Length: 278
Image 1 (cartoon, rainbow, N blue to C red):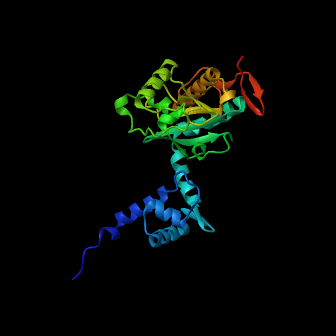
Image 2: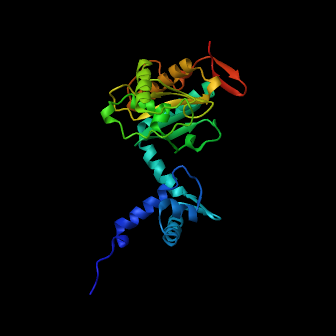
Image 3: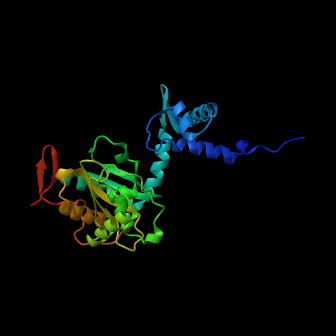
């Protein structure tokens, strides 16, 4: 007499295990077997067996006692990104915006309650995993996230995470968020985060596309809090975001050129070039 396979033996259950295992790398570049087993809530023996196979497939890499996502995962993710016309169109404008301002430029999208960084040009801040390419930040604690939320009716918001902010300047409640989004709309869609996402960091963001155009991505400038003139940075990022939108949609725009949005005079503060206050 044969018995039906248990749920743990079904393909669906195995897929769930693999998914649980891969998800533990979100925000964690390298992990040991014990850490992966604990975070994925899987038996150590099963975790080791799955990891071995993923290493063979190139989805995971092993170096000593630590594991990280493999090059095959990067290749698959890159294929998704290449299908995104906005992402493709954004690169020359992002590079030009970085050159003319000296600030770090991010292209980000809403992913559930977070923003996911699709692209990053610039190397500041050097520390802080939440700023890296492929990293996530809670949307309510991100200028890019709030620039996107301001374009949506509240009924269309994802379920938001009001985790404790990193600093006293951060958003704490739904009431705080609504007030901030009112200010975003008053500024024509420009979101400003002054040290709410991290001490000493200011971020200015704008949606890529006009209101009502199913905006999914935001462009932002990130720099030291004492070196970012928010008004000039906001105008530069707004114009660059619209340049990206026109380039991605194929619509003609008068005098459009990569980087034209950020052609503002510069001054230097220490080693970091920033937009002029003049």
